[in-house]
Length: 278
Image 1 (tube, helix red, strand yellow):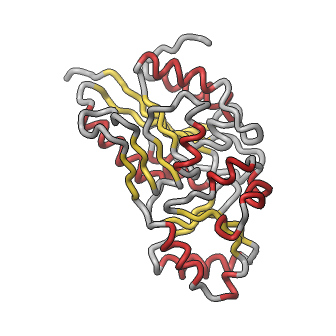
Image 2: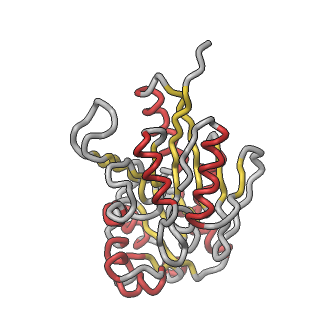
């Protein structure tokens, strides 16, 4: 049996993973990404709670202007112009979850005793989103341009949160927890989006062994990390620590882009793929 060369798909969370949690800089990971793309030895797919509008802005500063991205916690897949395979020539936007208007309608219909504890992005001005997230005002305006999820702060009890979770589940809306916010989404996850995209690459790139690498630091990343061929938990000193029982999942040696670089370099070496030292 002929062995195929490995072709890694790097599914990466952004805040606290590819981007520094405080400065939102991708250095030095941006240099490594450029090397991977220049040599065509892998593909980097941001998979994030950010919106498509935020990703389009970020792609100007990270060398990912022509890449697929998954936004709003797996709810939306954005394909660039000239999608990497022979199929489509136009940009595509695939909604995997529930539309934003429907989510807001469900929130509005909640019992007041629960609704009072929810402060979502739709409840906040761009200035208030900026204060809650640390984003600049222009970035906060982009974060409010949502298609399929609603981040929110929760001020109620754990028991009330479980009641909220049950009510929303009846409407096919789930609650996921990120590093700073909870998120209302449809029944779409980062894990599902990763599986769908990996399947597409397997079908199209038959000369290669498609290998998934997943990196993240929040609870909403854990199932994706566990399901990947190589999973990496990023240290998150300011957020919720995630843990796994999967033996193939590793913990990066440092948070943010420096830890991202070290982990990706190590996995590429294990796959026999050499990257030049920067």
